[in-house]
Image (cartoon, rainbow over all chains, first blue to last red; front, side):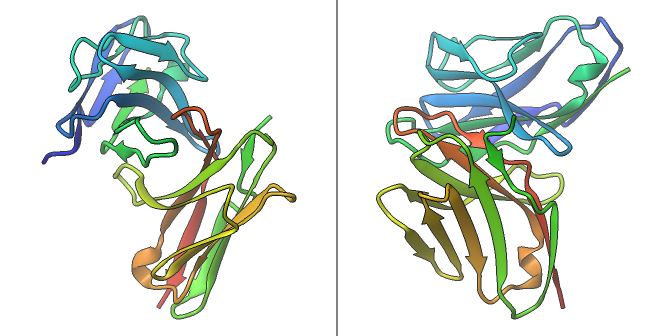
Length: 114
Length: 112
């Protein structure tokens, strides 16, 4: 099992550019989510999905879009990058059937917006 | 206002001694709590959890204590080892979903 994979590992964008952060898991998990980690802020939930075709907003969704067409993949799209989106992005997945089920995290994508 | 607080940004402990990491929360609806460990350039990994029906949960060297009336939990690591040096995140959630609120983290350094 590869677990949760994220690509790319690093990315530099200019303000206004768009891009997609890829996330895939091979554990047949229903629940997937995207977080951003900023210094002193912990991990903040951007968007999440409880299954294919179902997505919802988290704490900080503005400027990001998601879709979930398959159980395995959960891409995060930045529509028009801004310097405030400079952060480390983590994708996570879990079975979702049990409250408090541990989440498995990917290695992260470090994004810099100039 | 942060719902989950970890007021110590960093902590240094001698190898073999006890490490105590603290976490406070403000939302009384939180019923489930998890601790994650994170090494540099890696994603967080699950360490231990506790639900509100318990006040203690133990897994090897790691024990989590929950004081619901004080809205406080703590993670004890005994004995501490240099490999425990990492950032530790406390996370809290309610009993109805999968979404958790994370604290800002505490960087633990275990000195040989």
